[in-house]
Image (cartoon, each protein chain N blue to C red):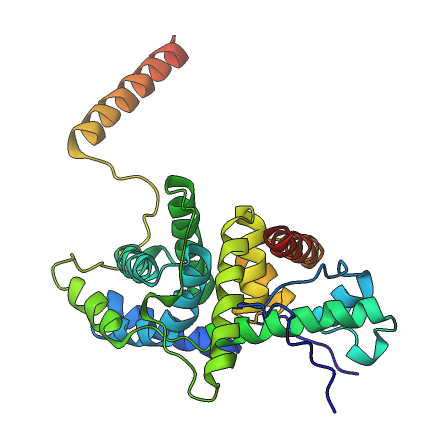
Length: 120
Length: 189
């Protein structure tokens, strides 16, 4: 025996009933810190049911892989790129010849000046 | 006593990556393919979760790996965390530049062979609703939710990749769940 009502409207798509918000215990369960057995109230169980469905859908997405052609497309696109040399670390600063000559002259001049002053 | 290590990957994996990087920098371009093969799936899923579009996810993945190749000599620390940040930033840039009202994971989606047609319809319904709600989450909440629920990462792993604390991430994920649930309810209110 069934209690079907032939006149009742048949929904053409699933409808959502207002689900209670996730309590800290539900959040802890979703974080994997609590077992579902610890969800004591009917509201918590109802919220958990919604999240079980959401997680199931998320798990489907988790199984997605990069389309095969994408990996080869990336590798092929590297062809014309410049190779990246591993540059040796720069130690200190580079001394160019003119700077070295001028620096030498300045040092000599200062030395001569100091020497001249000491002699006097 | 046991301690839970927050490592995203074994240390020897990071060492192996470093060896490959050395080979690439020495001129072996093909060696870079190993890194692409090793990390493209999780990075693709992140881009897909963030953008909702397989085409955009592919483009972001390609651009990110090219950028990684060009700047490989600048890698300091773990390659996987470094390249993740390139992808994550690209996703955020895309979200900032393009405001989309509708996104879909279904452009190249394949139905599960285990489901009945009715189950498949229900699943598609929920998937559409999730997309709707995810697309409306603020960027940082969406990122945290995608990493936790879609990519299935631990909080410790997320903290390493996003360079933040476990506590901050828990808060983001909790807020994302609350917002997501509210958005789902709002749609059917």
